[in-house]
Image (cartoon, rainbow, N blue to C red; front, side, top):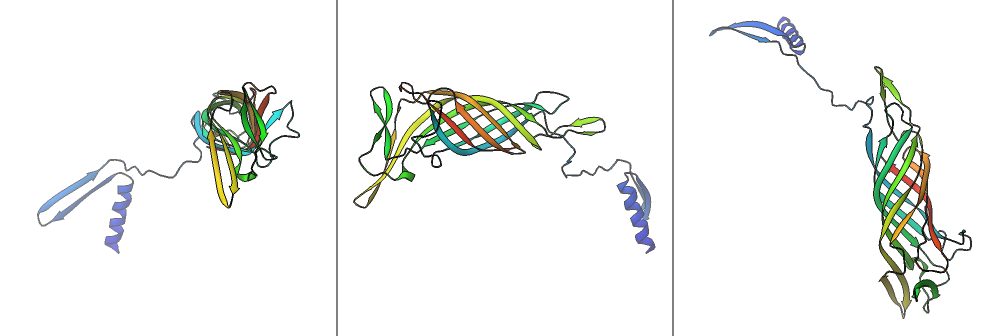
Length: 264
């Protein structure tokens, strides 16, 4: 017990970074002196540390999509619940003030998928320089028939983040996406492709058609968007300021409403 107690004392001195002892054996005397401090790192993440001024997020949004015709979406030619949109991409979020966490500039890049399910067994058809809806001669399957536009977009928003600012040792600690958030801004983009999908059945054979064409769709898009929510989840609204088709007699603008996730 005496020897164990002595070794424990040496171990405590070693941990404290200062150990001197001498020992004698059959070959003579020797001594060891350790004066270097012993550093023990804690690998646990310090929850009190704040974020960098610019952070990045993965964004995903989905919901309902439709066209505004003559300023309204009532009596639409497209199914309200079947017409959907998807959006995904990466954003960067930069805090605009050194002393406040309220204002952020949020910008990024991504893709929008806007899908329209036409009602009453109709499809889009190019007639002259316009794209209009015509009745298809074969009964179409509603869930297999739709029109899709894909856009590469650059969104920019001014974000108001009401996350609490903590303070430690006289230094402010900022964190984002921890409370209510509100963003307003817009987007610009380019159309990468337009496709029409048809699904029907003839003599027991299931047939799927996919047509990739211009369809008189505008090459570029730009619009307004906004979101409001709590932490990573928000209600999301976007509206195209330019019409979807170039030369149609009546302008129709795409509008989307759904839910958005910003994973920080």
